[in-house]
Each structure stands twice: as structure tokens, then as C-alpha cells.
Length: 342
Image (tube, rainbow, N blue to C red):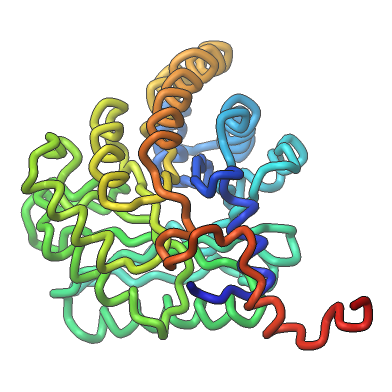
């Protein structure tokens, strides 16, 4: 059984339900929300529109969530006072404006934002997205590995869980090349699996993986071949992991979850699969709210039932029968605590 520090154990428990399953809603998206609003508003997305939509997501979807993922630019300033304090709070650290070079993508933290500030803001975990292609030039991959490692070290220092999201992407010149936050149309399973293999190394200090399907979501058909790829991904992860939706449709993402749970996943951290249909009503705010209250909430209840029945408690990934009672890490971090009371 893995020994967890006090802060990491507390944060993981805050993010999950009492049974150890993650039902987490992502409200940190920036381009997937900013760009449609900008198009509807004639070229610029008003800060108030973006923040208002994110606040609505918190208000309407938190009742079905165990944790909410907020960004510091739009969601946190307006929505944090609407967030139920009984839920886990995850905050994102990566800048959505990654640097696109001729050889690959380079990630960076949001300006003037850090693990320390996330901890001070009261968050229970730090989330970071890193674009990665194992076959990209070494200089690009070294930058991405250093980025991930640097944040892992800071999460250890401030004793807060590190939730790491991996996405493969098309390199410049490849078919269907795009800089949008969408699933890679011609995704190769080996690229996803090799990326997980790399970042599962202890040097990155990742506590929870947020992973994409190893095959395009449209190909998650329940077949044994697809399941074998999910099984291998779970084996390589070697720690608690959840699925991201990558813009998949509702039915597609449900199929993804079926494969993931059979492979040992502990839940989901998803956004667009839940709220994208309602968002199509923009700028009809009443229409968006109705869509969230009806389609969005109904869908979350459906995948939550699936999660309850098929997902694995997060502590099982570390060989624990019930990590809720594991206190070895606490005793190691605070030697002698409580001895006087015995």
C-alpha cells in the first residue's frame, strides 16, 4: 500500500465520494469557451460572458459532482463563492496559450500563478495539462518533461495532490493539423501509451492521471481489442486515473468510460461532453441554463450511475483495501504527533 502525506491524502479524499470514486466537472476550459463566445460577439469574448457561463456551470452541475475544476482567469473570481464548500476544489496551472513551434508544442504556467498560490487559494489539488508527442524532437520533449517535473516537485513541497492531464496532438505538417482543443483525428494508440509510460516514472511525482482514450472515442465499440489497449494504459499508469472527454459526444464518452472502468479507472474529470450541447444556445442565457438543468444534469446522473457500479476506488490503484484509513504517511511527516495523548 502506498504511503501518502497528510496533505495529499486529504486532497484526494476531498476530490472523491465516500466510496473513493471521482465524479469531477471541468470548468477550466478557455479556448473551447472563449472562441465560440468571441465568434458570437463579433470577434472578442467579453470577460463577463466567459465568467458568467462558467459560474452557471458551477451553479447547475455541482450537485452531481464530487469536485469542480476552475481556472484562475475566469471561473475562480466569480464562481468560487457559488461553489459548495463540501466539494473538492481543483485549480488549473497551465496557460491555455501554449507555444506552437515548428517542432511541437511547449507548455508553461499561467503568468503570476503557481502551486503555492493555488494552495493559498484553498484548492485541494493542482491540475496541469501537458501536450506530448513521444516522437517529437528531443528539445521539445525535454521542455515538456521539465515542465511536468518542476510542478511535481512544487506539489510535493506544498503537500497538495498533482493531477496530470496528457494529450497527444498533431505535429506541424501532419494530416488534420490543428491548434484547437480537440481529440486528434488520426490518433495512434502507441503515442498515448508511450506518453503514459514516460510520466508514470516516480520523478514526476504525479498522484492522479487524467487520460484520453488510447483510440478515437468513435472507435470505443466494446471490442476486446480496444479493451486491451485500455487495460495496458491502466497498467502503465500505476496510480489512480480518470478519463477526460476531449470534446467527445455524450454517447461516445459513455462508451469510453465503460472501457476505462473495466481497466481500473476511478472516475472522470470531464467538461464538454457534459455541457457542450447546452452551450450551443449562447447567447440565450435562459436557454443555456435550461439545457444544463435538463440534458447536462441528466447525463451526469447517468454516467454517475455507471461510475458507482463499475469504477474502482482510487486507493485500489495503490494496492490498498481502504486508503481512507491509511495514516502511515501522516505519521512519517509528523513524527511523534499525538504521542502525548496516549
